Length: 279
Image (tube, rainbow, N blue to C red; front, top):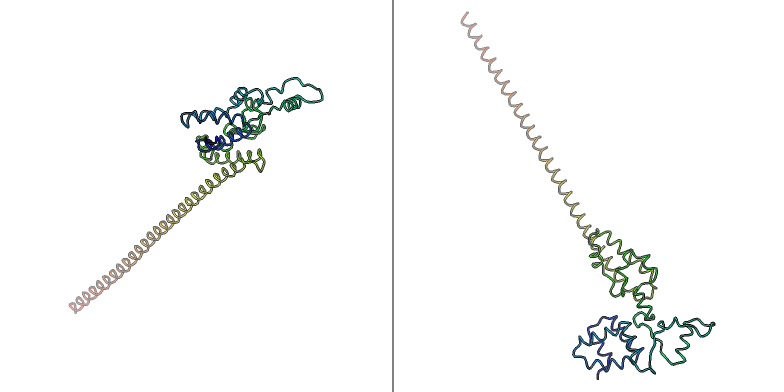
């Protein structure tokens, strides 16, 4: 019979679910023994998955514990915390812990968040208490840190908002989360990854803006050169027309002078003929 841990590794479970099951079976050997008996009776992997996921629910752990033999019962501490204390010198929780120790009964906690099961059921949260005051989109982050939304998912959630404002909000949310968790908390690695997504997106956006600026600058230079060229063509044309006019004017003046000279010569000739005839 294969080990239950080997079966967990082979099944299509999330990393967090596998971790929770391993902790559960390590802390609860009797539940592990029962699971090793039940798993071979399952028809296929889907039935095994349903069984293991059901085990992860807090109420299922309590049910399994109650069904085990009485001499090996494991009790959830918070379920009996409210019983009256035996001595006024001790708090109720201390009294319960002592009574459980005297009976050799193991105290059970939730393997997922290492908190009492009843407390986990009543307050299903994955973030510190003051996080709702620091995070604007608390509902997006109140889940295991592996399931926190990427930049693309965050943008889809705020699809009606401008991209610049989405990036600004995402950056502020990451900074708030970094303050909520200790520097050595695993969630910090996820935040570093999300911060890298934002930086890459902003970098590519700057590159696109730079390329657009370069294109617009080139267009402006080209338009300016064309305008200068047009102006030079017009100016050159004007100068050429002006030169042609000056040449035409000079030629006309010369022709006029020549005609006047010719007329004067003809007049002088006629006068000379008349004077000759009269003599």
